[in-house]
Amino acid sequence: MRSGQTPHRAYGAYIRGLLLERTAELPAALDAYQLALEYDKDSPQLHARLGATYVKLGQPVEALEEFQQALRLDASHLEALRWVAMLHTSQGRLDDAVAVYERLLAAQPEDRFTLSTLADLYVLQGHLENAVALYRRLIAEQGPSSQLHFNLGVLLGRLGQFHEALLELSRALELAPEAVEVRVALGLTYELDGQLGRAAAHYEEAIKRDPLNPRLYHHAARALANDGHVAQATAHYETILELAPDDLEAIMGLVRIWIGQREFGRAERLLAHKLIELQQPPELYVALGILYREARQAAEALRAFERAVELKEDYPQAQFYLGAQLDQLGLKEAARARLHRTIELDEYHADALNYLGYLDAEAGVNLEGAKALIERALIIDPTNGAYVDSLGWVYFRMGRTQEAVATLERAAQLLDTDPVIFEHLGDVYFAQGQLERARTHWQRALELDASHIAIREKLERITSQEAAVGTP
Image: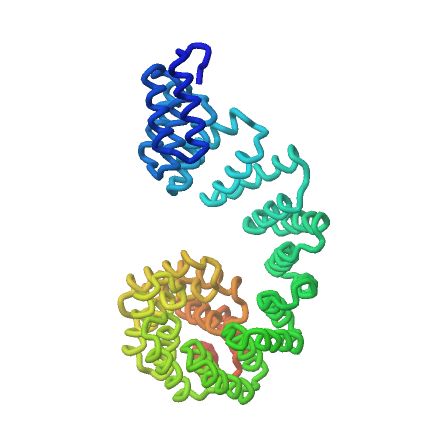
């Protein structure tokens, strides 16, 4: 308040308002500030205090009006700017909040609260590069701290800059060597960078510091399993179940390991036991269905997926697996119905979008709709080789062979262990009359799946065609 220009009565009312506000007598404080404004209508400070009182009374609309009036009188009034920024943030108006915090930062470029809050808002907006710049500035101006290096490292990891992320997280660990969350962040970043051994080592160190935390065992088990250390991964999942017997993720982690080792009986016994112990959670019926599917027990798999849907009809993953199993059994229309239901329940279920689109592409029906479904899946997961293959196949079915070739070649680069992709490439090249390229890709598909009789027949067809051409 401009006390030098304010009449004595305005100043007295203002002081009384401050005292009443500090003792939480808010309606009385409001009256005092309003009285002061009658004597000094052009005081930005009075409007700011009036706004603050309205905030405390839970009247944000009135508060904002007062703060905006303060800023009309003094565009650089810091208290009003802070309150407006906080109001915008609390009401989810991120763009407005960011604009005000940027004004605050211009006025007070070294204010740590403004820098860190603006960085957090940039993260919420998805402007990660801006947030990174502010965290670097905080470290340069305020000095290093474990939390700042941790936040910066996490952001760099989200941007895919793993080398830089690991450097920052390592600095955070140096400053706080006992910090479990830093160990976990390092482990996750090493995993994303494909360094599974180092990831597991950090998770193991975290476990030493917090041995009763099941989440740490989950991280370690995942990294170890993916790195081929299944015995250690199994031990960690078993530890989780000792700590938390109802941990479905740990149960399914064990089942995945045993399926991979083709220990179907061991996985089946665990699931049977846990289904009884935990009163038949539908998630475990889905796991049982996957087990039977991998063991080539199609009827049992179907029954397990059906049971999961009976227990929880609005469970998208159960509907999806049931649809996939129905398709494997040749029940295409029933499969489509389940896949449609999956998408109704979860419009972002990429596997269901892709599967349904691929079914239509295979059948040669509703090709534009199939393409749209597959493209929706690719928006969600743009580097999924199976989805890219589906798009290439629908192009082929539409007669757009050049686009089909380019798309399928990209799919093969993304996923070079899928025989279906190479079979599709062979089919497209064969349709173009490029027999050698067709042969090369079909042979690669056969290397990946030696039991594929249809590919052998296609290779024989090339041999027959070449023989026919060579016959006088």
